[in-house]
Length: 146
Image 1 (cartoon, one colour):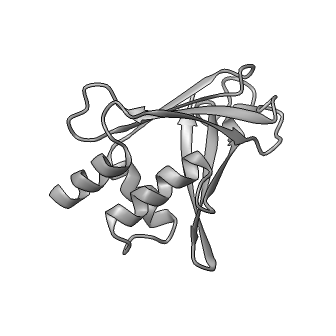
Image 2: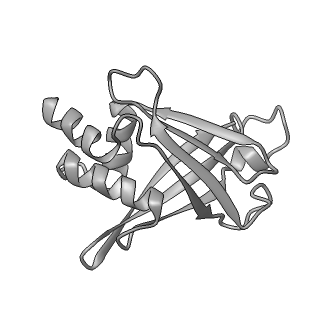
């Protein structure tokens, strides 16, 4: 657990949040070509939570707070469960910043495009992160809710 906390601190330092502009996947719900994503440590989070806020400035504001269990799910779903936390978190930070061959895009989840009150769940967007490793690209998805 200490190694995981140290890795989180190295790639998402306290007070070291950042704003990034990620391309939208061109759905009806992402009205602009770019979406802003604010990435920062969740306020008062001694357990190293990551806070993501995204908006295309027209559709709305979407937020998600990710704890280690959420990050472990993204890591597993991307096929990176056996990767060291330091490597995984470095790649997440790079994808959110569009650096080092890693990238991110924002697309509307099915619920964001559905009529209110339908059973698809709460409105959300999908933050799709592409992690570049040598010649392989792995993909992780994070749902960010309105």
